Image (cartoon, rainbow, N blue to C red; front, top):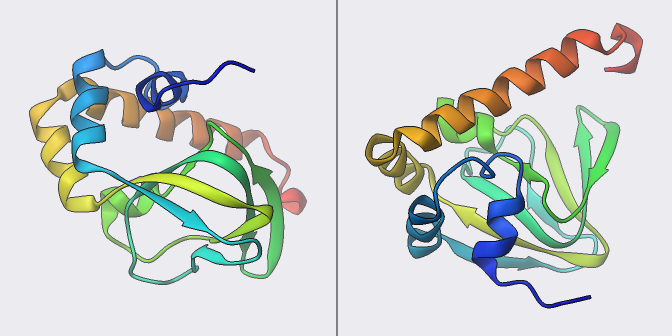
Length: 143
């Protein structure tokens, strides 16, 4: 498999695929990379820690109110809800067996970038609409 740069990886993330390269560059300039060891918690449901995180490597195990949800791999993201409303995390995310490497952007930095780049706000709205539509089609007993 060929090595991908961070800009290449982020531009393939569904949330960011429609934003211009300048926006990706600005995201990278204010973001950070985090590594979570196997089994470690990247975020805890209800916590005030916020920020958008994109999975770069590994597997993110998702749990909501004690129930497992589908895991996430490279290209997936989480924290888009908390980064907007500032509320506590809606899920606990733990690193899988191989650990987890994410690219993260703080709420403050993300907010400033949304003000600067309307294309980022539009991308976020599209992602949230897709999430809502997906939830509307999921049977209640599978939520």
